Image (cartoon, rainbow, N blue to C red; front, side):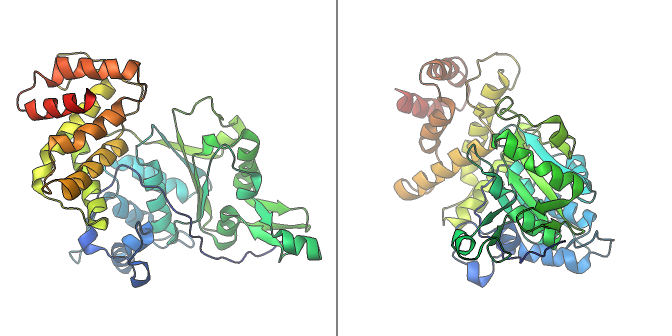
Length: 392
């Protein structure tokens, strides 16, 4: 016996991710969400999604809002035949996005894997928004995530009063996605305990979720799929079982290939966040963004951009997401305690906090980098002095 599940939109808050490009001027959230600090993707980019749907004449899988081609265009950006500009949400190899979208059109789930800050959450959100029009069917993975978060729970007042019944059952986001043929999301899958992870095996292989208490089941309808994210620095925390891993097609999201690509990503995302926070923006800040990106890339790679000097890498990831955070915080300092122009002193403290995670080892690495690289670099004297001041 199967049972239907009512679909009530969740208000789960999503986390920002790194690799994005914003076009806030051309996409506005619905009036009811005008005060939302961070609208969901389907709200913030509603105009672009509507424009794509209106001109999308390609075949669409069952219950998809857009064709696979249009979903890829939404993520990667482009210009439609009527002149509508679709801003890029992900800056990276096109083939990666095409493989991810194609996976969702099959019966295999999608696992987005990469180091922290490579836009896994951001990409999963936008994929769900473009495919299903709803990115909020989300399970946030933690060490304390219970089985009920993936399967279902109970309204204990109803359960005690009337026993197990359909009215007492509380569907999880995954159950609701199965019943409605939509895309569910599981964030940080490898942080979830292994026995809870394996709850997904039956869901992904049999496309059904048994409810033994009621002698019923929920069968997934066409259009259902699942996107999970995991960072590859969590190996050994809660590794996926081989049975579960076989149910996923894994797509690895890389760090930006070039410094210019990373500068473009950071500047676009910072501009989007700045608009939502009413922070100033302007071309004057691009030099500081380029410095932050250069410092992060050199420390991350263990060698300077010209390849001449080897440097030690600190314990932190120094991801694109962290660069965005450093620059955004610098803009806030410039706006509220400066003249509105992003300067070296505005980003120096943020860089120190991102680099020095281990107070003993990382501080030595940072000091050596300042003296051996930053001090000798033309045009970086103000930056060097600012960093030395906050590091003292």
